[in-house]
Length: 368
Image (cartoon, rainbow, N blue to C red; front, top):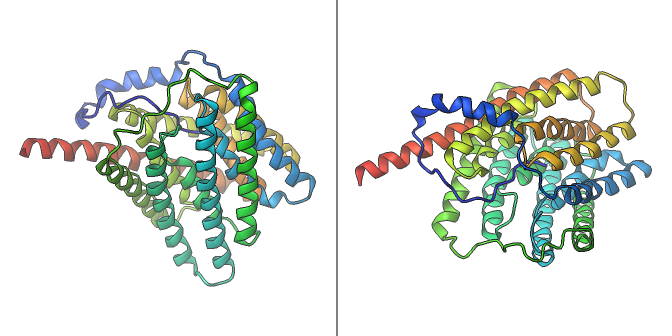
């Protein structure tokens, strides 16, 4: 659904003062569609991974559990252009990771609903756990050589479930997310017969990953998620977890300039996607209609996410918002305003953390 990156870092040390000359290039990148790839088969598989559990929950009258199933279904987004055996290993790993994230989030929501956690404690704990999900998730993804890189989905799964009203005990949330993830593993295996065998694809390179690299990954993702969450929470805007999700997005791009570009894409694409969502939610909708839109937007996002990130966000944003609205309906105006403002906060923090890292590295080199 979100961030994809696999190239090495081609530009580790841009000058933080040189953003101006690159704005035109960034603007062009927002309207340039990348070359077509073999996107149809993965897009259909990923949409089917999401569709099946959501349809089952709708037909059985348990649409309030759709958030758990949706995050489990995000397992299918990983391991797109790899051999079948690698896809199975990666799907099993990330499926377990996302299931645990959903379970932790559901436990926090359950404790808050029971009165064990007060409002401020609930918000603070969700922010800290979101930062840990970012830090730990990014290290796991990097260590296994998984794609997409980064920790968008672990952060989103943990914080969105933790922030929503408790609708099921955490063990049931674990079962639903786990079953959805298992469905993705099955579809990932069957995909070898639908054009995704990829027998000649290069295997992910993980041999050169050192302990220092893991610690750096842990700290930069954890820092961005924690700072953005604290700032968003301090503003009093509902659902500050959107800021944490946006903050980790730029960090997954290959190269500092591309990381800045990714953050700006996030702001612009989200604003456009919020406009699409506002239009859709301006009409009375039944749950089954929202479900159809969610599945369609998942498919469209997968068709364009590797070709133009800002365009993909026009589909990703309503997908994410309608997912939340399907499971936990909220006033539309407040929902959309929060998404725009918190995304801006998070993206700015993410970009700022990139530039801070560059400045600190330059300072260290000058001392040496």
